[in-house]
Length: 147
Image (cartoon, rainbow, N blue to C red; front, side, top):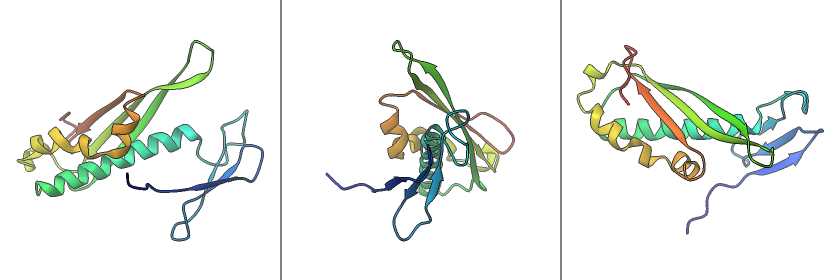
């Protein structure tokens, strides 16, 4: 088994933490949303969906390159759905990621092959999906839904 990335977290306020990614990267301040926290940084749910969306976008960029397709940029919007479990605790019950390509699909003749496999390259979403449903849509630059 390979070792994965490591972070360090330290409390600096009531619900405020610094996340240390190592010497080569800047730290990050996290917090909880009001009324629990002060809202001075991203909340854990945002961190989770950011990781899922970022990995999916990077995997899509990799697959586009593999098939020499120029998407003219990739962007995404991600959200999560939260509900209470039987014990009354809040849980993330789903993640939705909408990926937008800059180019229209007609300009990418191998886009179907890209879409068939890019999600399998994503370590984060494939791991999270084992416990939380992750719905992914891809739209081209003209707004046409491709997947």
